[in-house]
Length: 554
Image (cartoon, rainbow, N blue to C red; front, side):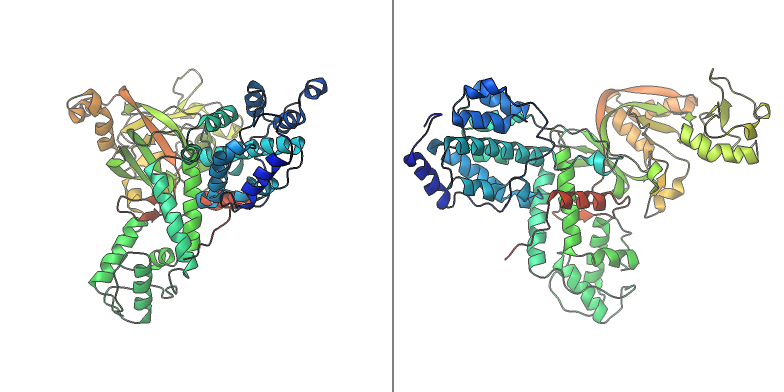
């Protein structure tokens, strides 16, 4: 049918299609994404008056979206949704909307059920044109959310400074209209990484677990140790069984099998793997499947923000709540180190972003950030001018100023005119090597003389930068592509004692991420504490946008 489909036959075809059910949809109201619907003036009245009723309605309906407006203008407002020939395209889209909640998307935002119902009630060309426009607006909203995320993360937490590649509305609608297999086009909007697929599978498993009643009674003991017996040991065993860490059994003894299960659980949850079910272990054991599902849904949203980044390529992966840094190649971890990240206080939290590591600095000097200088060191020097004497006072010309020439009491945080610098040394705050990926937040990876911090379970202890437990090994791995003996190459410059900047022949992408749920190679999902409360804030924002915790039936 062309642009001027009229008469009862056309509407009868659409009504029969709609009443037959089309494809399953679980949504209820038409709502377009504010981020997609940008203000744009409607076509001039004279221009609209020259169009048919159908085309005029389409033009009005897409006027607020430049990509859709250009698409329909270029094709003379020919439909892609509202003729009998478009049945497969409609069915594919409504089927996709039926799975929106599985991806943790706000299903009601796309209005699938209301749109499907309108096909049975069309009585004019104008109504058909308005429905055509609404379908396209819903597609663009759905495509945006599935491919690049529901939220604008900076609005939720200003320390999430990740750049997000949003799809172009014109490319989305053009690609969908041209697709030989509309269902495949829609499936391909989601991130293609294996991690996203595993999280999606975990989301479905948790939904079924919730529907089945969860993981059983919580363990109420304060601590359980190997060798103990009793009802609480049995409760712990049953939780381990329900979560897939232990086979069947009803022993009330804390035996070798239960010890092994607890150790496996601890290792995957970032806890000390000693086999003792202490307070932190039992808190993780007693987490409800609903809590874990929230972590999964937020993790899926975070991966949508990173859609388009090739996670199979060699990269550095710093997971903030895991307190770890890795080199990953083709989804295999080739280097791993414990790490220290920014403290919980808002001003010190490590931000989330991606960049490219370019430089290894051997024997680095520490140029003390202004915030640390005036907040921490200035008050100390006002009390004692020789406090932290290992750090130099430097003027604007770069000259070192003797401390006895400075009246620290005359200054405050706003007018202190000097900088502070620590020369290369064994006790330099940056240790003996740092790794640079220039960014506006002055975040980098580095060594530290405070090695004892790496033994702590909670390692949110820095001013924001990432301290690496195995810094020399990280340097060797990064320098390996440009020298046959990276260790000797590194040690030569280290022994010289002078600051040396080494440019990486092959810069490496670096991703500072925050995943409290992440799929392990063995199929389990590793969970971590929400150390900064970011996940809680993000899930609250997702709920506000319309995301719901689903309950699946068996």
